Image 1 (cartoon, rainbow, N blue to C red):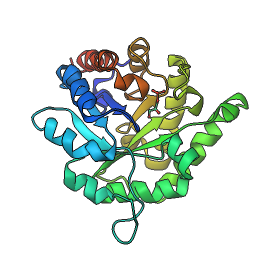
Image 2: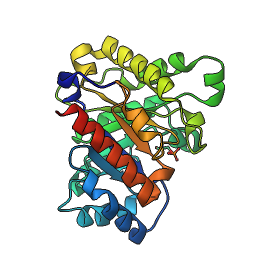
Image 3: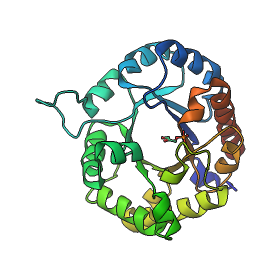
Length: 264
Ligand code: 13P
């Protein structure tokens, strides 16, 4: 359970909607209207498809909800057709950017090295990268989870200085994404504690204690609060359920309750 005020104050609960390649502008705006009331104590971030980012930013101008990108280019500028840079996202008004989602790794050939470049670009642009890591079903069954996560963390964060910078980690076991089979809260906690231990070895306890580690993979309105109760689960990265306004609103409410509990 979350009890240590000094630690939690630095790790405000964060709920992030990854809308992937879904929705249209009407649905997305309607959906946002339903959970804005739960975005004051907890931090709520929506990551729409690129084309809707400006619309969302305009729509959310007087709201506490923040906007993030689902991906960024490795490049800052130049002849890279179809790409969008971290600097452009920041200029538009985004605060966050997802990096290394397993769908980007599996479908678009991204790896830890490309993630390292993207994390660097995001930090240079003062965007907070949300670096996604997670093991496959096969790796999970073979007991390789810690080995895989350690490699994903150490290779992508190699040489990255976090002094005065913000980074979030999202633990998204690939076997839990879009399958309806979320990790149990106990598995999430054990794995998040391991991730924090790795971050502690890499950056020291003071930095590791401020890094928010989010869980993603079949989060829904029923399991959200059970996840958020875990000491090292600082937020949730939500796919499918974020497209259902009622579900996502409930998930944000759980985070708001958690925030209330820890902000006393
Ligand atoms: P689901 O919540 O649909 O399992 O997706 C998780 C995810 O990929 C969030 O980035």
